[in-house]
Image: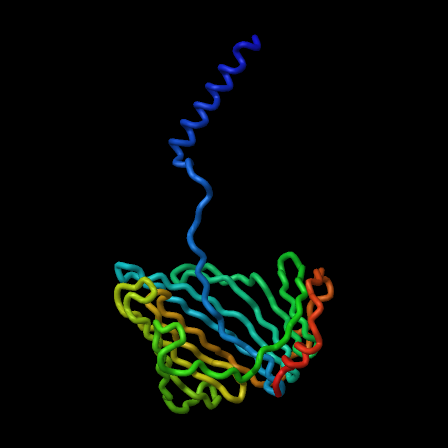
Length: 260
């Protein structure tokens, strides 16, 4: 092929490629939907309070036309006498399909060794990080006008009840966002109801309603207060571990020892 024809052919190829891209509607940079997350039930390293359970979540997202999208997951959680915690992290599945909620991560937390393993069971790999347990009894947010000056919190004591044989303390919090304070044209009410078990130190059920997030219900089922199998809290020997721990000043570590 004569060299003088090569630039013309290259130009023709470029024009054809551009035309094909235009027909496919591909003339933009990569894009996607904003990620959305649900804050799961929290399980602290409380000693002498072993249990195992299934942690369930149902998320009902409310569309502008009042239609809904419902998704769910169910994951295994456990804690031993020393406060070690094992829990699965699972994907959400649509409620109207036969899709399964798949395990994506399993976590092994040890408050005595100050270690936390986050493992991919498919790849049999784990990341090892430092773990320093938070205070088991953090002070509740004070009611009234919040420091941001844009929201107001109320709290109601709904009394005691029983849940799967456990005595629980019920309460409801309502957070009011006044209109035109966070870009909202109307007042927004966020309500959360809690079923708290003092014996376990966890919320066994939480119901959240927020027009921005929809309705979220998180609850425990199949609660077993027996001591779980010790093997539950051990990383399988055939998993490859990548150590990401960092040194931590001893003064800080002593201040954040698990509370009894």
